[in-house]
Length: 369
Image (tube, rainbow, N blue to C red; front, side, top):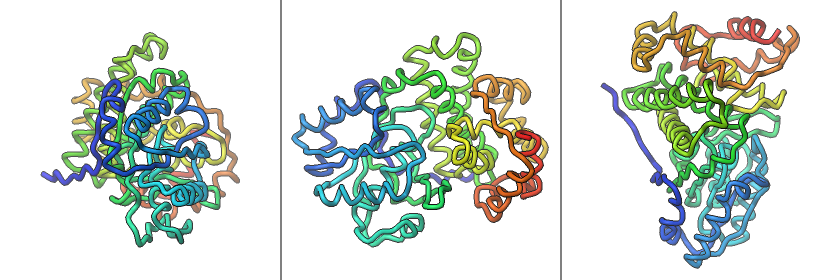
């Protein structure tokens, strides 16, 4: 039994958890840079909760709100420069996956003045990143508890960085920030959480701990997904939102062990080229991914669906009904142009079975032609 696991982040969850634990900010210094997007942290109330708590503790702050969806490595290096110039002792990231992933890179750039994009992706750094506090405002990414940052490089392609140095020191998870999420965003982020759990479970690098997290997350998600499919997103209560958030954290713990697999690898181009939200893009491949594992590791698949008290077809139908629709058409030329992306992709090597370029091209043709 392999139970290897490292949780590098102190996780604090619950309603008003920032206000009731504001004293923890003082452990990291007297000034910070807040890294966030343009508006979401303001609309959900997270930014004001953070700044009020900082003022209460006598900690100065500046805000960098230039983080967009699919953040670029360049913007993170720019924000790192602002952190240095302001004399920040630590970083606070507020938001969903994009701001939280970006804040990890900002923390590294802030303490390494000569860092360029290549250094960032290789984590070729002389100094440890500044301490990072993460405040999650969506229920899907799990970035609050992972050592992973996914950024867009100078070629416009999403690429991940993984290092234990990127774990947030503390993560605050208050589900009240997710209540204001739109229906489309709620569905997309929830599917992202499901993809994390499914891809981690059916993964060559899975161990006992990652499987426990993945299965636990899927049990929670299945309960809420049934309610969404029966009554709609508008029927979700605060307790339901809390369940979605908890499931996303469990998915984050799962992929901290294994990383992601095929659906994430193939989802990136849908986001880069067609603007499909990340979770929705990953969800496009989940049924195919499950089918592969039904063939390749049937005993493992049977174990999962027995735990979930369902069968594979019912589970796939539930996922499909929650997932937002995708309207993308690919020509043979588009598929051929994508082919080099599947060469030597680490996450594809974690899949059971032989998922090579030819297999992927055939699958894309089936799904999108």
